[in-house]
Amino acid sequence: MLINADFSRRAANHAASSEWVASPSGGVERRMLDRVGGEVARATTIVRFAPGSAFPAHSHDGGEEYFVLEGDFVDEEGSHKAGTYVRNPPGSRHAPLAPKGATIFVKLSQFAAGDVDGLSTDTRNFSGETGGKRPAIQSLQLHSLGKQNVRIEIWEPGVEIDNWGHGGIEVLVLEGGFTEGKETFVTHSWLRLPPSEPFVACAGTNGARVLIKSGHLIDAAALAFVTPT
Image (cartoon, rainbow, N blue to C red; front, side, top):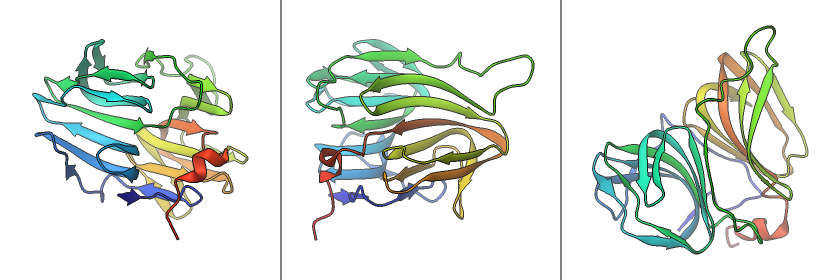
């Protein structure tokens, strides 16, 4: 299966117009953002778990990173509530479930060579600076290795973003929204740009809280998953 599999091209997915697709596990649905492969794939996906649903025990040979968007996502490591960022390194194994339901943004088989550390970070307390004049852009770094960087940013209403030389960038809206080109991205909408395209955007009237990954598409190895010609 190939979905937005040419990483040298812009890709976008809008929450309001994207369909949920059933997975092999009952009560689990997916919005496939990009994908190269079948059930075992290099993939970026938003996954929605109905209350009481679960995935059988499985391993992640290429690693797994995810951000809990809604609900409570539970596995052998404990309860991961909305706002938690998790990295399960290559070779890790778990049997996740969602007793009360959950929605997660997950990236599979996208760990860089030498990235072997697990991580769990609760970002709920990151609300930006208080008192006085707030910076137009505030950032909380979640993970960094080599050229890759994962972070949450808070953008004040109307702030303009002009990011060149990002090395490839993905932006998922957690709250609020922004415009890019002629498109408006609202909560749980996603944008991916290749290294050759600048990220030029404007935060909406309510500002935006976004999850960003950048620098991960600059190496030739990351661009090897292109649509066959």
